[in-house]
Length: 311
Image 1: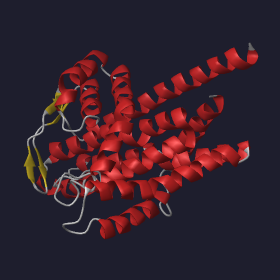
Image 2 (image 1 turned 180 degrees about the horizontal axis):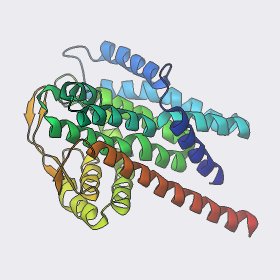
Image 3 (image 1 turned 135 degrees about the horizontal axis):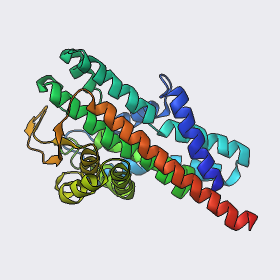
């Protein structure tokens, strides 16, 4: 327990110090492999749930086996170093901050075309149709939602299951981002990745929603989570974004343009409309939540150490 707490602290420190690697990120290579496999097994008219399940297992099982062998046979010092490195690569806190700033800076100086270009790197919607408030809301929603996927879920699964846990979650989340679309191409082939991602993210998403509420406007955050979270199409994104919007006293969600047309999404949160400062405020909420998690993790580790080693 103590070692895993230290690994979380060191990995977050590396993320804050180095940010996301600009070159050679393992997820890029994994994504290319997943693209190649999907291109062969999901040809038009032949995609199926079974092929999607098999593709998922082909990509995950070798990684899981290697991670388990590392836990069993690597010397402790080397294993800790590997854990720190891979958890750092799984985290996306600094990356989210970089993307948020890339949107808020042009918004603050009135450069809407540049802000649209930058937010398009964060969301899948048709950003050319977004006004200033729409761009700010899209970036804010992305920060809140990805805080659960790219920060807290990674910490949760590492604490619960070590290296195999964090690797499986991160790879499944990546596959969901690539295959988890409800369109003709991926509705069947991506079914397994999408549902497994929902399952692995269920508890971390609700812990994230609770964290957002506790470090923000608590009553409003909890109320919005309770009333609005279940209305969202995603069972995990809804609670996270509803609680985050409420904690920030913002109104998010609502109709939004996607490349297939406008989608009539539920309204989340309550309060002011998102503006140029909202993505930065969401990042502040996320960072405070990380500090809350670290305080709980380190306190729990210290209590465990005292009760099992010192006592």
